[in-house]
Length: 231
Image 1 (tube, rainbow, N blue to C red):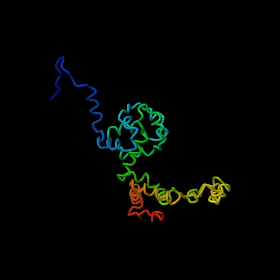
Image 2 (cartoon, helix red, strand yellow):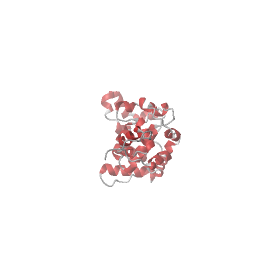
Image 3 (cartoon, rainbow, N blue to C red):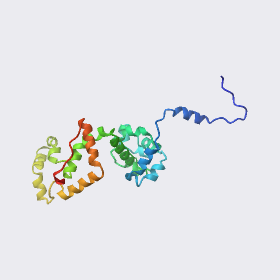
Image 4 (tube, helix red, strand yellow):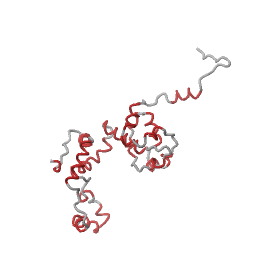
């Protein structure tokens, strides 16, 4: 049937409403629970009002180093987080942010996309999707749990020898002696400090998450993280 022509003086729907409805018909699912989880995260403590009052001015994006060289768009992340856009939970671009906090320092509403990213990343890791982004750090985190330090310089920097030459070789070969001469103490933190770090890892659930990441990387059950200091 042909469409009826509106009678003279009759009110018609706003054209923009029709256009918007067609344009966003395939919009991703909005989840109010996602917004709540972001707001309830302790890291958002100082940014809740800014998050809820984002005006989409784009200042965060204009100053973001990661946005300049990657597909990461801070303004879009802020909008999608506020809308509860579930696609954030499978968006790899949030991992381009390296938490320089330029967005936070420039935002006129005191929002922080850097913190939003940290919260979203945690959700991705929790769901298992983000394991691919953090599995490369599993060994570093395991060392941190066991020794209170991410790694041993003697193991981490052998390739630096070629770049820095014999002076670096000598420094690394005599690192412990040099530290002793300077009164810097042991290379690794004392046992009591390591135990405090381990308690934090265990109580916050980080140790369980580390096991999950290792399981994903190994394709099977991971060996439990143990420490002589914890025994």
